Image 1 (spheres, rainbow, N blue to C red):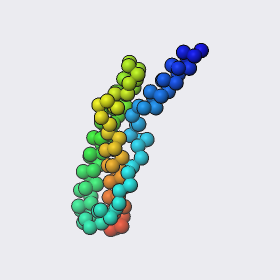
Image 2 (cartoon, one colour):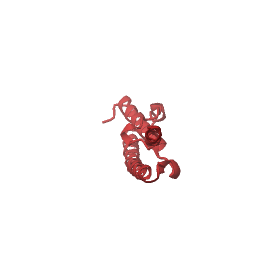
Image 3 (tube, rainbow, N blue to C red):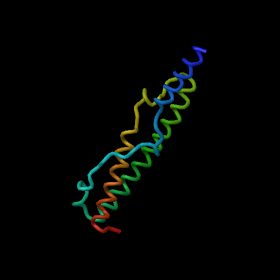
Image 4 (cartoon, helix red, strand yellow):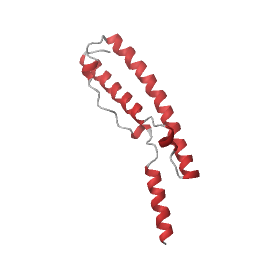
Length: 110
């Protein structure tokens, strides 16, 4: 009974340390004032480029989630904690997109 509790506790603790899925990562708060001096065309280009970066970061993040699942299953170690984590990058890019969209709205861009 005691060993079962220890195994369950260890498993729960290990799974809690796994990488968050991209959809569960909250955006950072980025001020839209950083972008209000940009023209609408510049904002559109910036939005597109940031979206491309976010797509790449999400792909990288999904790989980390999959690697964590395998790592936890095989050796009880979430690999993303050892190999570096992209959670901050995803959160930053999500925040930038929100700020750019806010700036576009303030400037009445299409």
